[in-house]
Image (cartoon, rainbow, N blue to C red; front, side, top):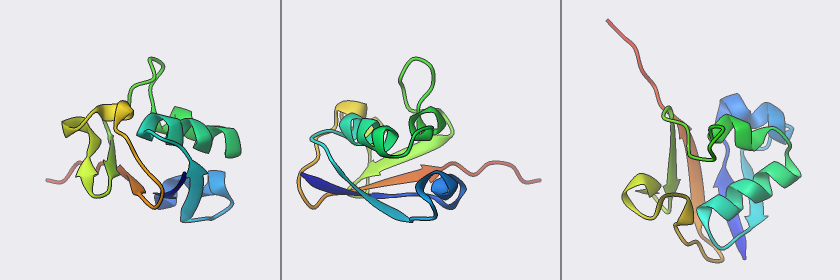
Length: 92
């Protein structure tokens, strides 16, 4: 199943500048594993040592936050879209 993954600007150095990468997967976690296989170093930027999505990274499957779905087990199908979005914090 071809899933489109939107890559944020800070991670594009790992994808040779590509802003969208297509992977084959049936879950969000599988898509992240496929990203890692194609672009080594990607998973460690998205997931912590326990394999969970880092606190400061938001992942959306078809515009729905996976934290409110099945997290990394959230199913995806052909034509779906995953967006990886670094959280923005700070200010005065």
